[in-house]
Length: 255
Image (cartoon, rainbow, N blue to C red; front, top):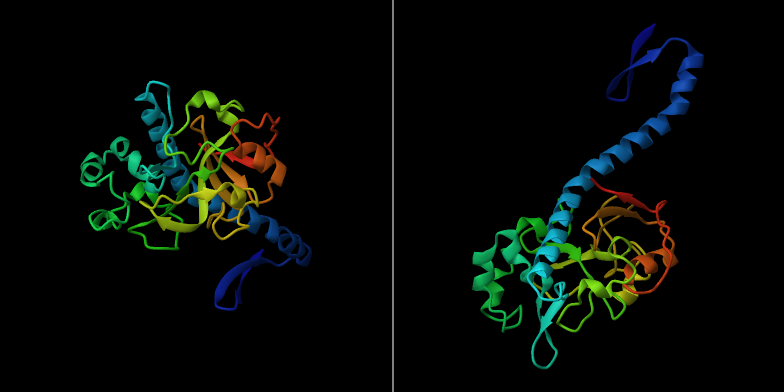
C-alpha cells in the first residue's frame, strides 16, 4: 500500500514496504538527473531556433555576392577601424530593412546618430535563456575572430571555398560568456576561444547548463559540452587546419 506522509511542507506518498522505499530512494538521483537534462533541452531549443535563423542569414548574404562571401565579423573604415558588427549587416534578411536603412554604415556604431538604435535590438539576437545584460540591447551570439577562423578581421569576409575543413566541421557562430551591445563590432577573440567553454570572461560561454550553443557553417546547430577537449575545440574553430575531427561525444545536434 501507499500511505501519505508529510515531508517538510510537502505531502508525499510512500510505500509501506521498507525495502521498496530503499530502492526508490536509491533511484531518485537518477530520476532527478533525467528531469534536469530534459529541462535543459527545453530551454536550449528556443536558443537553437534563433541561431538557425541567424545561420540562414549568413547563407542568404553570401548568395548575394559573386564569390559566395560570408559577412565579415565587422566592417572597417579607411584606416581599418571597426565600424559595424555582422549583426547589422544581416538585418535585411531578418525583415529589418527599415531599421537597416536608418543606420549610417559610414559612421561608427556608437556615433551620435547610431546610438539611438542601441536599444532597438531585434529579439532574435537575444538568447531566451539569458539573464545578463540589458534585454533591449545586449546579445550573446558571436563569431570567433582570428586569422585562422571564419571571422577574419579584415572587414571583407571570406568565401565559402576557404573553409577547407568542411562547413560541417567548422564553427561559424557561438555564444559568448559576457553579453555585448548588438551593434558593437566586438566578438570572441581566437585566443580566448581556444581556452574552452566558460573558461574566459570574454570567451565562449553561456547560461545553458553544461555547455554552449554553436552554429556550424553548414547551417546546423549543436550543443557543445563544457568537457570538450581543447584540441577538438580548436579543430572545430579553425577553417583550414586540416584536422581529422571526431567530436560526437561532445556535441549534440539540435533539431
